[in-house]
Image (cartoon, rainbow, N blue to C red; front, side):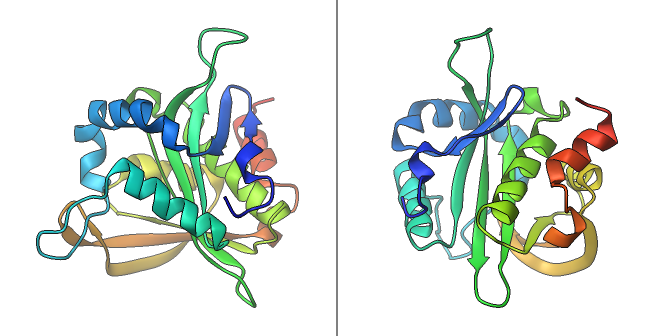
Length: 208
């Protein structure tokens, strides 16, 4: 899939695990998205072209894998251990590192979504911290950016908890839910988390 070792990559902390998205995740992913349609719809990116439609699951995975081959994206799903030891982790969301720029910039953009029933439980901050630490520590990126609509209170709480800096408003930045929407841009550089973002999250929450 492009990145060395990506097929077998697993990033984990506690019951939260990140791994590459797969074609065989189609059924579980589709059911999860259908169950969360009303929850996720207001924040979903849309095609601004007249008559534009969302890609199929297969088309999405194909595009994400192409980004991985080009070393411009890291397509992951968020999973959670449920049901005790030995149980297969359930797919509960998605996290994409995209728009990776190398050279002098070494920057990327991170986006995510999660099952409504798992929101507010610290899963997304943990997932973002795991992915950011991997990008800084293993891939050698320098800056991670997250863009959030000002109305998206749950996502704003995520970046606040993680200590991402608010870099201001980007007007009509992305086409979301059928219209061009403003976004607030948040960023973090590797120098700001020398001990890792997950460690800082744990220290801030008192978690072990």
